[in-house]
Image 1 (tube, rainbow, N blue to C red):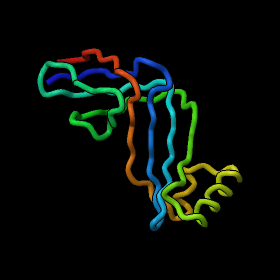
Image 2: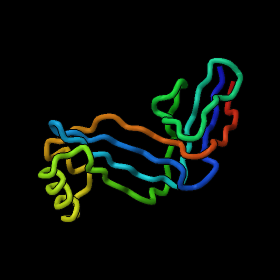
Image 3: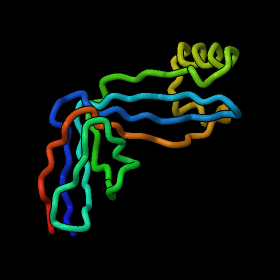
Image 4: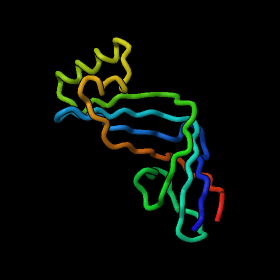
Length: 127
């Protein structure tokens, strides 16, 4: 068994997508991170094979997020919402609310994805 440090090889290459649900409506919040560090555990002593576009939270390895730094954008995808909810959400955000405030409005935080949009830099930490 080995533990590896994984980092993106290019800045602004980590996309965190969080799915927030209320009834049949799904809002996708995407946060872009400039840098991040993850620890990946492999069964043997070979480095993990992770390609560009992989979801680090749902891959074949055990992955622990250590940190993500310098969030540089946030986008909201309303395509999973009906028109009335989309309008309400746009007004909610225009009033200065954060998507974290949606929990107080009955929304549930569901799945998250962490997409690595470049080749990773992988360094052995421990065997």
